[in-house]
Image (cartoon, rainbow, N blue to C red):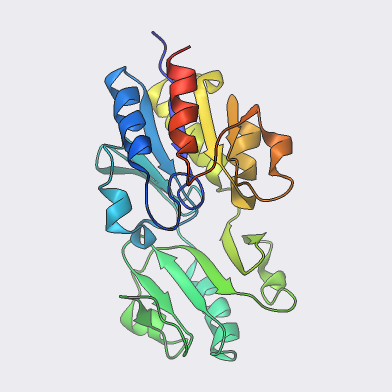
Length: 251
């Protein structure tokens, strides 16, 4: 039996409204019992994945922060972080607009410059100098901000990649995305691309879906994502991940 590797987005895919349907958990267990691999492949940094997601099912590993932090069987096997120069430039811009949600998503912690909404447990950045003086070893995977007119970070798009969503924007690292993370894992495990299954619903899943041997798009996908699908499964609320996994492992 040749194994599949399933790469699952979290929000709007594995989970609906922050909750993972029990049917998804059962299907993940069934797949692993049959010798297949199951990875989370998320835009969230590792520090931004809720504990209830980390522990809900026996995942083989995690591709986090748009391909910048990869973990297999509890060990980190790849890491890439934004440069301190890039972090400081972003900080300088967003300290001038503290009314806008901002979040530096790190491997081990979250950081924010905004005044109105600081995520639970996030560290407040008050000055550009805070990074070098207080957090010089912070490994920042990506940056996320709330809805704004225009693109304030467009001047940095030679080093960061924008993913613009209806209510927020996220910026990953150039040369890293969900597809590069998927390929890294597949090569490490010796699984050919035609056995890589990507399951997602929105814009930051595009590269992963395009690059996967089998692309599965959720029933609740954002408009336009259907063009990347080999097939469309049910919605996140109705355990579309479980239906897709079982469709493939029971063929």
